[in-house]
Length: 237
Image 1 (cartoon, one colour):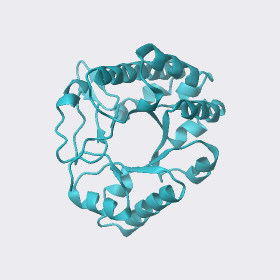
Image 2: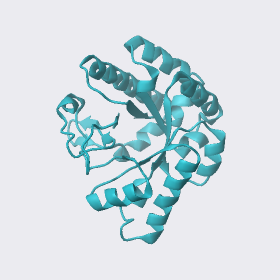
Image 3: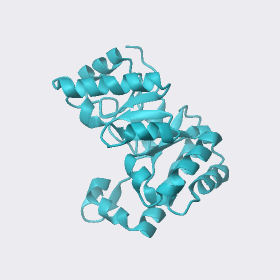
Image 4: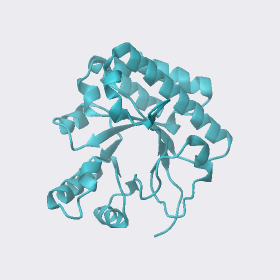
């Protein structure tokens, strides 16, 4: 395997609790159901992600994009694209250095009426749009026709057991083929070992993400990240 640099970094939200330590979103996602709080957190995460991208650019770190997950709350008042454009200008970060990741819940949530227009505006600016957790929803194929999607992310649930589960293997293969036929980029999530990597490469998947390459890292450690084994995306906090 030829060693090349990671192409992108994904921002991961964590809560540093004074008693319980580092907590992942799965343990506090109920808090995000409150609209105003979810909107405030999402706004803060975007600021931090774009500011960090600016720091990396200033330090000469080469990367393709910084990916940020957004929720339906971010679209709730119909101003998401305008807010994001202002943030990029404020920090001096080119739009093509950002990827916005959405899940099917965004298309069905409180801000659903504004999602299509916002994504079209963002894509016109140069922001990449990724459909996260692909294959786990009920209407994802319809969404590929309705919304401007640039990248599919194969859900980790299909990657983790595909070496022993033929159904998972077939689904992963189908998603890769679907992406290629629609001229979409495809990233496999949750790659944890070389066997999974080889299977995905054999399918024609060219972008990967998971613990096999790196565990989540503080942003300050990214510049020292050892890329000798990596030819894909690495999850970076």
